[in-house]
Picture 1 (cartoon, rainbow, N blue to C red):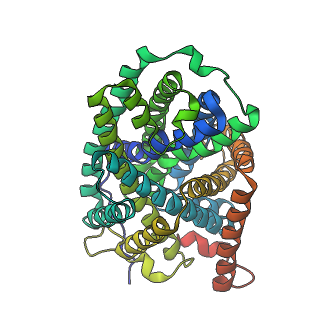
Picture 2: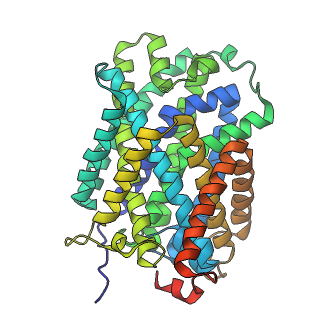
Picture 3: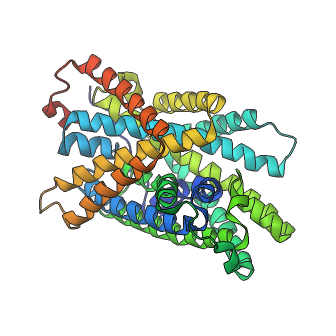
Length: 423
């Protein structure tokens, strides 16, 4: 029986907005507060460092996606260019990062929603939004991307207005002392903020559904990353220039700043913009996670039912339902700062493998020089090791569990490399 294939329904415009929707949100609305507590005003340098690492990674991913325009991202790239074990490691760490990240975003959504509706409860709201967005994803990717465009446009407008209103209120005194925790704080904050940029990978994981993928995937990645980077720098500059860094260490730093400015309509707009941003990010995360489950099940690394696609040919419905179930469980059990740290560590391992995969491409497959991928590999390693020891140990334990499962399924010798070509 011929394997049912996904349909190519996503053009460049929708791909860019799916990337923007995945990038904007948790980073600028939430992680900025955690990073400001770690690095102080030097968070600006952390943002630049994280953005530079993301740029190196995006260039590696863009040329890999051009060679392999299928679902799965670095799971496919590392499996084919390095070894099936490397591919499984990439897929497992992607799932770890994005499942943790999705639970954090759902909790953030509920926190900002409480600003608008103080009477609602945190956990039921977080669980409820996961259920609603899962149902929306089940309707199909084309419908999903149209809703996403509307959400992202509103979020962009809210962030731009926040930046423009806040710029005249910036005071240089708020940037002193600039780096209270020194280089250690800057690197640790950069590792956390890297989580804010990683949504562009969502475009690559949808490689089987993007039209003209060899051209549109690299373009969409670079456009989404560039646009979000400029917006991140504007918003973080305004935040740090208008309030002391210590006062931003909340779950809703933008709302805190807007409240201090006493611009009532802006405070409400930021809260609504944050809610829409969380919706967009969570929508994209559910989409991307389910496609990774799909890719790994297709190659035999996860149970076969996860590879099944709906009769309409555009929804891996079993993978999507499993994704939603795990995210709900994490929402009920998670500690916010810990899962953000875990999400950052796991995705840095994932991109280390992406850069290593790009280094093995032949000259005829390469778009960018090897030096780009070497920079990406080294900087990902540095940021991963800058996180606290507990996060690193926990991440390695999660990886060990995944590899143990892999060798139980495929035997001590692992999966033959030739089998991985069927991805």
